[in-house]
Length: 421
Image 1 (cartoon, rainbow, N blue to C red):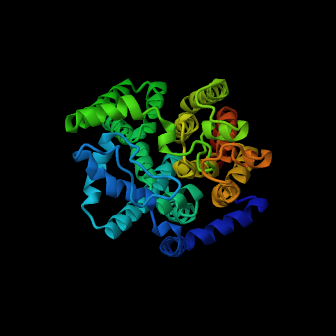
Image 2 (cartoon, rainbow, N blue to C red):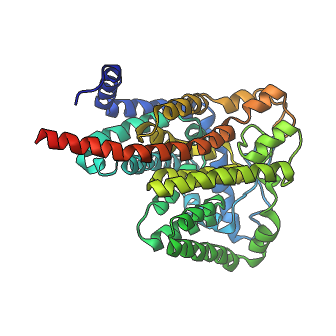
Image 3 (cartoon, helix red, strand yellow):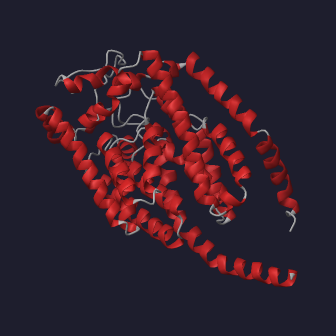
């Protein structure tokens, strides 16, 4: 069947873009490299924290020192568990410039790999039936997503978000329960938020994977105690609950529920009733979305629902933590859901993700420590969490509608095959 007249321009545009995908990816990589080496990205201040401070895990003063490359208004400490410092140790054996480029290269490869996994999940059997087409789409998506703001800021700050997201995505989609569990457990040992991935294992009744994740996480904690018991005890029973040590709660960079609520209400809401109410709403919405994803057998959106919930609930979710929007956009474009849902969510997500709305807010906040915001500015500060909540609301409806349409499509396909015979 030929494409409808209204869709032909889009089909032709996609054909042209796919043909040019390798060239576009090279151009995108060169462009991003230029912006990194000539701008703020050349500083990679967060990577410097890992590189300079990780060796202190062996000298017992990991949480007593700050990065010598810190901004003047915020001395940057090491905020991850001791196991995280042990994981970063091999990187510290490299010269500083080599460490920078090694992380950039690994992050770029992880982005491409995440794109391939996401496309394979939405393509299903089509991935092998038309492998060349999907490989081209992977190149094209990578070229585009290099300019997604959470990805841009991950490179600029020298963050490990793409590496961790790749590990988590690989673990959550792995068939082997041990691999699935150990991947999540070790990722949570480096940075606590991936632990929420266990909800997906429980929802899909992958109890063996959930158990393995707990075992691996406990092992990572135990290794930290083995290296230095006093240091590990100081982190787990003292520093872990101190979100202010990680950074200013209400700065525009923090796109969690707690950050957005604090900017709106004018004070750090901590775990008081406004935050609890927002958490309850988020958990309920995520629960319905996850149930719909599991019933529909949609692995990708099930994984993304859990990760989005983690970003909402974490006390601090820096804007560069939201790299999970990259596979979400892939799901929205390639999954056969209602056009109105695709249109609304893409029209809302894309401007926020490809325009630096965070920098717009930072330029208008007196300091990173100032909590109150003017009404219009606090509204813009809800950009990421508000769109995440809207997505959680929409997902169950579009998945149920797609499930109702599927039998009709299959019947039409069968009828066409019979007629063709």
